[in-house]
Length: 288
Ligand SMILES: [Zn+2]
Image (tube, rainbow, N blue to C red; front, side, top):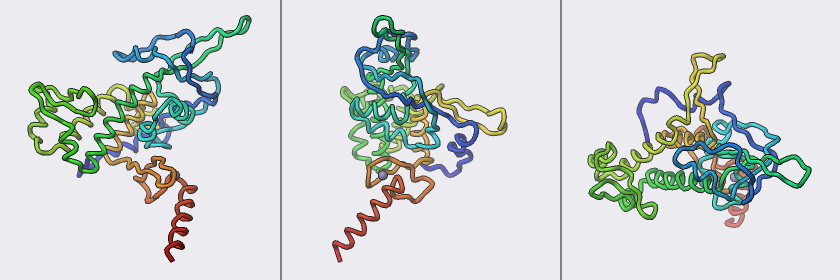
């Protein structure tokens, strides 16, 4: 996505006093089928039933510290999508926190002891959100790399609308009477543009109502963007990526994603930079 006039750089809306903070719990996370009795029901709309499905990622949730994900890890959506299994969920949660679908559960332990409270999030919820983001990022990567023929082979036109063949069965992405479908008719031979429209529509839908512009009373005249949950912050990061405000690159040494938008760095950290230069020295010595 390139725009000639950028009147408002979205990432400016995260620095300073109004920054979004998110808790990371210092107790150990684990995965369990028996997380005890639910104290408050999930309020997450038509996917709420996911939140009560075991197994759960749990922790005692007593000691926590806060960090600013939008500022310190603006490529977290990319790191999130690398999660392959329960163990990786636990690692991610210990490092960056829970997604924000957290429920408090109470577990009555041994007789005579006070009940133990746990913070829990369903792994089914994690898997659902992972699938959602991963398929869009996959499509976005095809757009970025200009793979028109692959995109064209994934999107097909049926009588009732456009279908995306990333999943099985393929998913309806635009009904025949919708704006996106009409756009697709116009962009018929340009699958990349059609796919971009779809991606942007989905991102708008995901952050709508979950990222709020606010004014900090002490810094009036500036707008701040406040996501509600960590998941929403990650969708915001994905939006930045699509707008070109974040440029995710993978470190050649440790394969971690980092943002190269404001630097010419080739690696994620000083440690990896040193390892890369050692490797380069080694290989040039090998040649000479
Ligand atoms: Zn690295």
